[in-house]
Length: 184
Image (cartoon, rainbow, N blue to C red; front, side, top):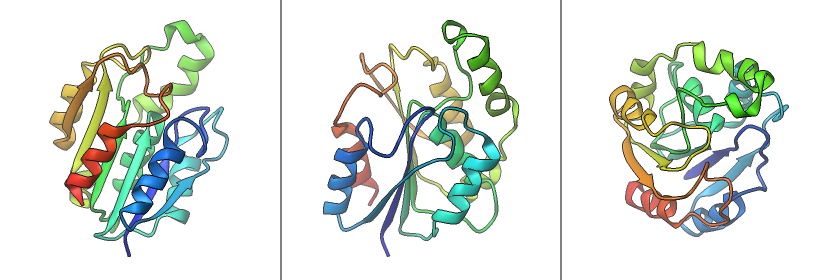
C-alpha cells in the first residue's frame, strides 16, 4: 500500500503551514496520507517523537516520509533502527546545527539533545536511499552550510530556495510536490 507520513516541526501541528495542501496533493497520487500529531510540540523529545513514529508508521517499499525542521531529525532517528525500509524521505528546513541565540537560552537548552545525540547514518541509508532536502537562503534557524552535511551524511539531493525563511510561512510547496512526483 502506498503510504505517506508527515512529521511537523517544533511548536507545529499536522494542520499548519503547507501540510494540509500537500496532504491533498499526495492523496491525488494514490497515497494514503497521515499527518502525525506529535506529542508535546512545544517541548519535543527524541524518545517521545521517535516512539510516535514507531507506533504510527507501517514501513514498506511504498512508504514516503515528509518532515519539517525537527520532524526531519525525528525521521532520521526513526530510520536508524533496523527493518524500517522506506521508499523516500523529503525534508524541509532540516538541520544538524541550529542558530537559536535570538530564541533564548531555553530554546538552546531544549534543542541540545537533538543537536548532540549522534545519528547512525549508515543504518539510515540502509533503510532509505532516496533523500531530498530543501533549504532556504534566509532561514532564521538553519545555516545553509548544513546542506553540505546532508549531502555528505545521507547523500541527499539538495535544493536551496530563495527567501522561504524556515518554510513555515507558505501554504503551498510546489517544489516539494514536484520532487515527490519524481521519486514515485
